[in-house]
Amino acid sequence: MAKIIVVTSGKGGVGKTTTSAAISSGIAMRGHKTAVIDFDIGLRNLDIIMNCERRVVYDFVNVINGEANLRQALIKDKRAENLYILPASQTRDKDALSVEGVERVLKELADDGFEYIICDSPAGIEHGAFMAMYFADMAIVVANPEVSSVRDSDRILGILQSKSRRAEQGERVEECLLLTRYNPERVEKGEMLGVKDVEEILATKLLGVIPESETVLKASNQGIPVIHDKESPAGQAYSDAVARILGEEVEHRFMSVEQKGLFQRLFRRSA
Amino acid sequence: MPLLKSNTSADSPTTATFRLKGGLFPLTLLEISRFDAVDFEQQLRDKAAAAPGFFKQTPVVLSFDDFAGEVDTLALADILTICHSQGLLPVALRSGVESLEQQAKALSLAIMPASRVKPAPDLQIEQQTEPSEQTESSASAANQSKTEPTEPCQLELSPTDHVEINHSPSKIITTPIRSGQQVYAPGGDLIIMAAVSAGAEVLADGNIHVYGALRGRALAGVKGDSSARIFCQSLEAELVSIAGTFKVDEDLRKEHWKMPVQVGLDEQTLSITPLV
Image (cartoon, rainbow over all chains, first blue to last red; front, side, top):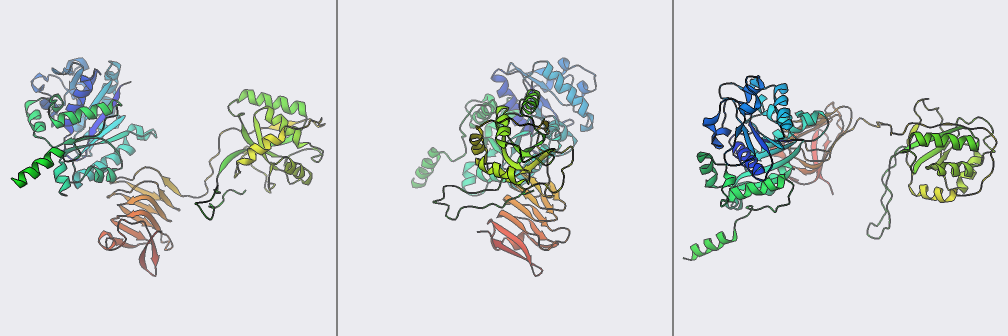
């Protein structure tokens, strides 16, 4: 049985695609056969972040419409051996997705031996986002530590637990929160919501905190998912999150200002 | 049927060794219409073979409402012994017959009031409150003497699963109410065992209880019940309303903000009082 994980947020620009790329790469690097599907039909980005843009021949919509088979459309990732990307169509719109079509593709992937299927949701709460979350077993809700993003995440969680297939069957979708662009120094100054605040508002399990980092932007511009950057705190934080998805107990990091930073500041002040 | 008991707690909680709480348990009624020890045991055994899961220390209430024949000559102890041998635990008696009740007392069985109205023919499970100690005492009291009863027996045993009995139209929600969601409890109370997020709306014809933070909108007594109230563990609401009289966030922030409160309607104005 493949585990279907949707990466969603409601709000745009919080890091869904970055997260989808990092998490899917991380799971694949740990030896699980993984597919990542771009549900953002018409605004496809995942292939750029995964640096396979020029290798796209057929896409998700082609497979749904029967114009290509899954094998033709799946792109094998060059860095992580067990990872395959199913890109979105840039020339269609989200209405090209149907419940039956998406279900068929997901089933085909599962039958093909994929263990994890990551669905990269578009922003918003319309058809595209709904299609991405409908079949999910687990949802990673990506939020930035600011009120509007947290509010949108709350809305998405509500839709998830009432409109998804699991909800229709009276079950719950496993939900967890990934806080991205986190800056402990700004939290300390009161300019940013803290982890505790967000956890309290959303009342959901914390999957991880990804610290704000220049390496994230650099990585996506270079087309290398940030999880491959083992030096950067963001990459390490994503690795921790992957470990937690796979059931390991890993202590949360990058949530407070580092002690070293404090000494440095004291030193700077006295100098 | 004594279906509800109020919660009673001991006076001094620090020194108390126990506390009494109301409980509601589904109990099966074993309606005995005829009794012959051999037939009774055989028929019970057959039933047990058909539904072994059910005959595992299952508490039952003995009922002789439909008993044909001389009730007074029955020996309850024998019935208990046979029941125990098949995995049933009679915990109470329902008959209204003096002689049986005397025996039940001696056997430490609880006594249920006799039914005034005959139950529907296909619904034989009843829900009754039952102190659990009774189960053990009756079990030990029952390993007793044997006598030969005379009448033939017939046995009706009801289906195993519990029957849903709805006492009130109250609605209980155990998951958080998220932004954009709306929950309405028509004709009763709404009880939410989690937080109500900002941007969510909860409504009830009766009271609203929120065992968590109330951050969204809560409207109680929406059909005009001015005695309705709102209870919450932390008042952070966007709006609270009782029977159409409301206060918004700005007014609410002045006092008791983020405190456990109840909201009621007092002479056309909302009163917000802390819950101690």
